[in-house]
Length: 242
Image (tube, rainbow, N blue to C red; front, side, top):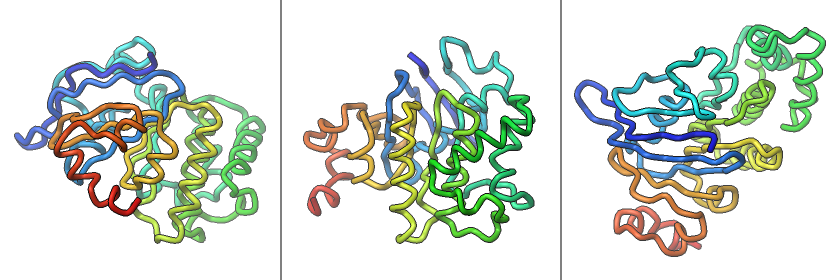
């Protein structure tokens, strides 16, 4: 078990956003988290790598309480890809993928560059290594963000709605890159609204509603035989079109 979440609670201004969340993740799993806006999906991800503090419960990563870990080291092992990319706009593509390796992993520039070039090739960005990120399209920026996370050799990558800020024609290219990342064997937890993608890439689907997990099931079971009325309502439009 790579990640164990027990009785997790989180509130903002007296509004309970996460209510007694329990979730276990095995190494190599790809889990998609679905649910309406405001259901707590992104907050859950942000608690897992301590971008948000939480009010109760425990999160164990590789058997250790994350609150006992060095935050920078934790985030190198639990990578995150944001919907808004969060790249360093003052650096070019290559340096965006090198800086964390040098500062956090203490790699030499030569090692960091070699890993960055290898990873940028994986995501199809080899031709853009010297470009400033301001010159990139949204889809290209997100591919660089994915490469930057992979460069840290994380045990888990968290994806927080990685296509929500993209133009429709760019969504497919980023989803295809995530499918390639799956083939590397890294554990992934993906918050997404892309139903067909979730169906194709995930081993399990977690469905959240109003701060609780309503369903946590193998992907095929979730889409073909949802157990909860709220889940069926959420899936109705998708199921009608497929």
